[in-house]
Image (cartoon, rainbow, N blue to C red; front, side, top):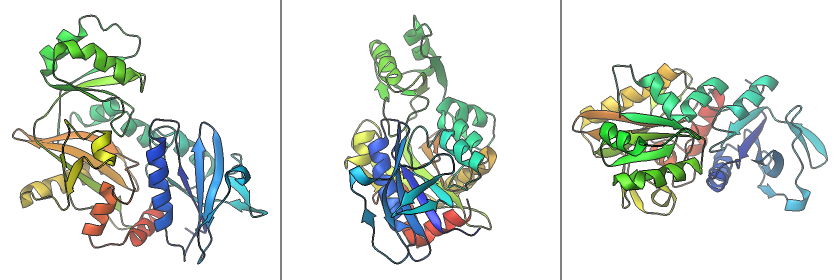
Length: 337
């Protein structure tokens, strides 16, 4: 694949857009500037503009806001510095819609533009927590917590009591299509259930109530190196808060141990299961899988097909622990997505 102009797309139509900007800017800064021209596209609510660019061997140029060229969506191009630039490849760093739920992937695939990560169908399935769990509930290599699904507008009368009876307390109530823990509530009392439902529906149209599993929170990323699917080192997440929420993820209220100080057998299991999930779902590019390890076994939490990529995020920590540079790692992802 002959690639010259790489477009890193960030910003999104969701509450995660600011995190997406941080992830996208860091990713763009780490792409090999000797091999590729790198263009940063800020895309939010249909307005796509080239925010910055870095030509081979040169420094990054930040374009003044009032001068930023619009991206032509007909052929995925833009006029930069007086010249029309056709983007050969898209590195998608949009957390939430439209970059994580298959919409951006579908657009690029219709134009024949190669992109990072999963295809449109797989992205849509994995972005929805309930759908993704449904694909994994019957496999024999991972456990899934009990859950209840609810669509906005459906009756919630008596649901709190039903949820407690089926799931127990505490439980988590969260939108099925959210990220960065927006709209997530840990429910400890039955009388708090309805408020948690309202919070979840403020972020999406569907929610999932899920039994809380007590154990250690662990995560592992998988990528394809051109020959095989490879699992990166496992990280344990130790949070100061009730769970790994937005504050814990992005404002320093957690500690990540990389590599996780866990038995070799558990490490091997997590890495093997992560590769199996990656292959079972038909994933591509870079994907992160989150778990809870409890006394009852290893429980699947969710798949992140556009994992956070700030300098302090989990995946860059895994990459460094594996002995690779971020630049070499991203080149591998780009060449094998």
